[in-house]
Length: 193
Image (cartoon, rainbow, N blue to C red; front, side, top):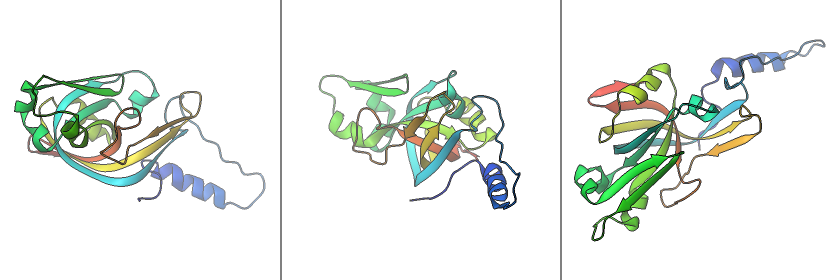
């Protein structure tokens, strides 16, 4: 597993300097707007790389989670990367959940869909990636995503909150989504970092 906290290099350096001062009268003070992430840590737990088709997207605009992760991608790989699958399976997303429903006689059902698809909460690591996931990625695009599956701890919502990435592709239901700290995106022949 990968160690450390991502996305807060300057803050961690400042904390190390502050904690290294061994004289009386020095304090560490953290400042920032409410909801700005000053009480949020993003800890990587596994490298992640997936080439997949975007089955559906859902944009989020309110709450601390939307500031951190403004969009979810429902992703499919293997046979699910072929748009012909959509003749048999309907995909949708709502309230950070991903849903699918297959028609009677569909060659793709739970046994194949579960290990070949995922709802992925995207945490862009840069402003450039944030713009790209919001503007450059559409349903049915083939994408390459690279980064880390992460665990997020925050008190920005007023109470402690934990958001844990799944580390398995066999799980379903609550807590089965990937929480991806995105460091690289390739879509339509363009690379974003």
